[in-house]
Length: 280
Image 1: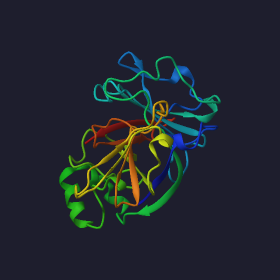
Image 2 (image 1 turned 120 degrees about the horizontal axis):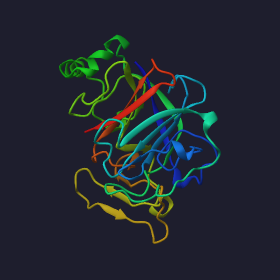
Image 3 (image 1 turned 135 degrees about the vertical axis):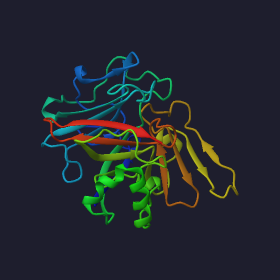
Image 4 (image 1 turned 60 degrees about the vertical axis):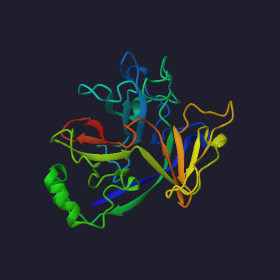
């Protein structure tokens, strides 16, 4: 099946947002205060604001915008529709400018003041060669393991392959669990680690700590913190790079250190209903 992987730009490297874009973290563009969800007695954190862009992200109507929010006190673990909220509203209902509400930047018990902000600057198209009619097998554990044997060319657990829009889901080692049942269908997934090409920026530019390490542990890891005053509230939670790698990766929220979030959509309702879960 065809799917798309996003290219990310660390928001702290490019200045303040000037218009509606698809992004991870930060604060939302134009969202009326009445739409901002709360959990654990305070405003939730914006996890993503993603624009309708078929065939990459089909939200059912031109101008549709998907919003994902996470509570950094309970991490979206709890009763349905609490802690991890998702909804679609039309762009016509959005105001202009970045929106902040009282308490939106309070530090959560299990996270930072904001979810790290990354802008989506482009897409890469892929095809895993799996026919669309095999999709139901991805939601039955015994069938999923058989698929992995049948399609050994797929990097089933590579975090670089676990942020993807469309196609077939890439589950964690625990397999399919906790997902909403039909008529919901898989829409996208975002891994706990976001990969970016090339060497990382310096700590002052990014506004967060940078760690360089060696996979073989032959050299000690080097941790560089930004200078006082250079920290940024919307910065990644941390940037890491293996010294011989040609890319680097960043953590942006708390998904149990190695989790992946999954978004599902119910196209039988108007506007389409959406839910998200995460597991490890």
